[in-house]
Length: 212
Image: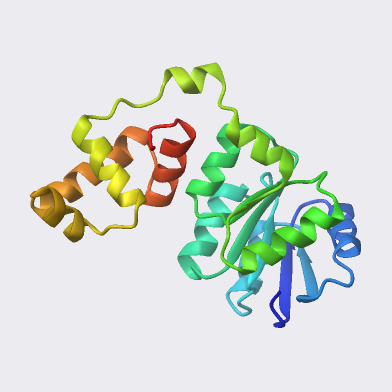
């Protein structure tokens, strides 16, 4: 566990939720200060001056939503750990939050142990979910399964190599294509899956069992 001390920002329009989380976070080894914000606007005003390293975001706020706010935070300070914390358990909402750059997603019924473990794992660089969210992500509904994008044999080959950590240049050399062609395939796959980054693409491809 890290010995560093972090300030945690909680953005939620319910003061009771903020106070409840403060209680749950007592005696955490890495969080030494917690600040609460009732709106996205007040948080962003503070965030411009104070680089909060960890932020809990509610999905529904009076002046914005968690997805848009997450995008703003990541555009300002990509290194900030952002965890969605919400009552909304829809799979589509969770995936949109991850696509916006979130480092994880927790439901508000999370217990103290899960909450503390989530922060520890997020600080280590891992994507974190509570147990219930893990089940939701692992179980796509019928509509989602019917809409799995169709990939060509070449796209599947490139996707597998990307998942293996290879760069476009390395892939191009391995399968005798130009780097530009590999990049074109990469962009096409992002478009087919309607995601904006490779991490989300690999996650969805894995969930749909497109990768071995």
